[in-house]
Image (cartoon, rainbow, N blue to C red):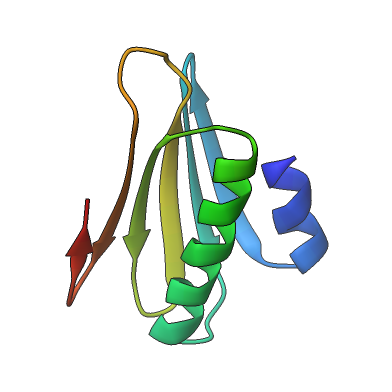
Length: 86
């Protein structure tokens, strides 16, 4: 579902999978505010699917996130150059 959404958006991206961890890097070249907006949108999507172990890394022209589907802990973490939420 996630990869389909990225493909439809037309962004260049990289996806790496390792058992229970999936990492994505989306190159959008639209500035940091767009990265923040996209992180919020993907955060809502993960909440709908009850996926709670997600780490976002917000940068100027990229959004990176790691989805951990193991069931031992739950958290959503957003890392940003200027602010951090946990």
